[in-house]
Length: 122
Image 1 (cartoon, rainbow, N blue to C red):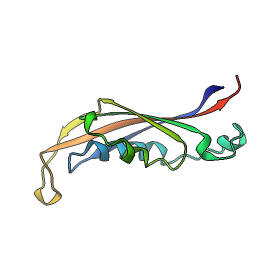
Image 2 (image 1 turned 60 degrees about the horizontal axis):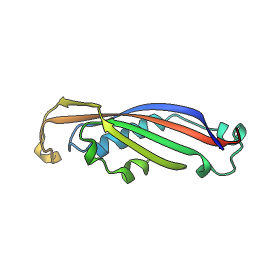
Image 3 (image 1 turned 90 degrees about the vertical axis):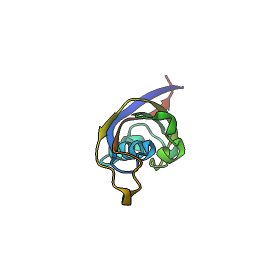
Image 4 (image 1 turned 30 degrees about the vertical axis):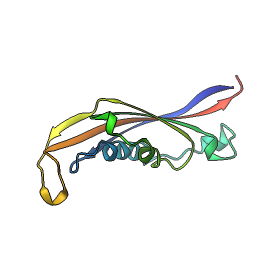
């Protein structure tokens, strides 16, 4: 079996308060998939179950070692999911607001690429 890509979607997510790279990463994935419909999974690829599709997520975010993978992947409703996290994204100085439990002035920006694939006979 050979993996064939159906779609690659990109997204951006920001955590303005709280300094949580997981929040920024999950928002980036949500943004990437927010306006998609994948009828090709059934009509072209011939899958019977949406959990047969393979969904690979790549995230670039500040403080990648702090990302909780299971929370980011939970954004995806279906598929055999995997996540790669790397250093990237952006840190922008914002404004710490104590009532929002900010640790500092940082706003974290993450970018995501979500690739949907299916396995087909070569």
